[in-house]
Amino acid sequence: MTEEHPVHRIPRRLAGGLLTLAVVATASACGDDDAAEPAAEPTTAEGGGWEYTDDLGTPVELDETPTRIAGLNDVMASLWNYGVEPVATFGQTSAADDVAFEGRDLSEVEIVGETYGQIDLEQLAAADPDLIITSVYPVDSEGTLDPTSPPYGIESPEQLDQLEQIAPVVAIAYRGSAADVMEQVADLAESLGADTGTIEAARADYEEAAAALTEAGEQGITVLPVYATPSEGWWMAKAGDDPQLRLYSDLGVDFVDPGGEGYFWQTAGWEDVPQYPSDVILYSLRGGMTPEEMAQQPTAALLPAIQAEQAYPWKYIGMDYAAQAEYMQELADWLDEADDVTP
Image (tube, rainbow, N blue to C red; front, side, top):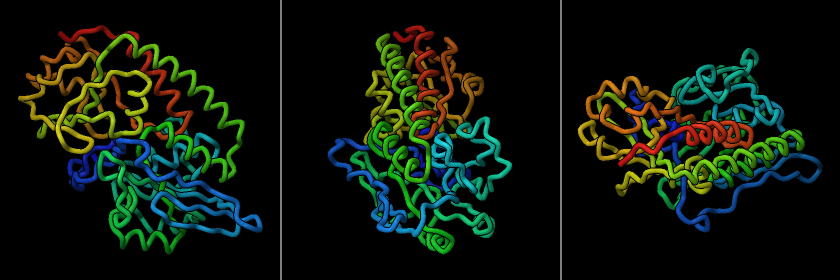
């Protein structure tokens, strides 16, 4: 899905006109970790400035550490969890509707984009950012990045050029395991002034949640992440291609492999949905059908997870320790409560 994320990102071509599948943004991934390039790291420039070379090889050097940060919802939510508050956000949805910003006071944040690739440049310029941060997804399961394509959330090279007239643009690669991406995001947050103690406290919560998820995974409950649409049926995510799901899989969650040769998604029409049973369904919150809506489909009503009412939200949560800890604990609780209902 380019959806956006990942899973939480819905296939672009579905997402509202929706842009076009090819990019499965919600996705990331990578086969061998060795195949991925080393993560970019911020450094202190000579004389006390700020330097960063992103995962697309774009270098940025500023005289001072940037304090007015704008960018993609997914990244902004994570930085905010570490105390770095954005001045402006954009994304596939409005930050006001994004679960990643739940409980946040957005009154001082300019929401300059609510649809993928649609960014109000005038409004963004008025927010006067020092730096714009987004993400970039690979184009295959090996984690390959396409440096000729604009980063995620930006619809074209021309739009990227316009953004760069406002402030430098950098992108973090969402590929491999979320464990690696989270470390990179934490390093970036710290370079932007985040308190080390805040980051370490979040890391401790994450490690506790990881242990709980591993224990819950030992029960062998099978899980299938789905983006469901009335007209096109199911889009089933491949856990190895999404950093968040790959992390959970590494921790012991038993995801159903939907098969297929494509990257990130395997599709199935409603008539074929019964071929993919699971004990638990994770349903995308980014525009997909609810469990109640899915249950109205005759074939979906036959699924063990739907019959057992074991369908839970698939939240596209940011790549930070705080957000992941909260969702991983939720997922662990669901798995603990779930019954093995598949044949």
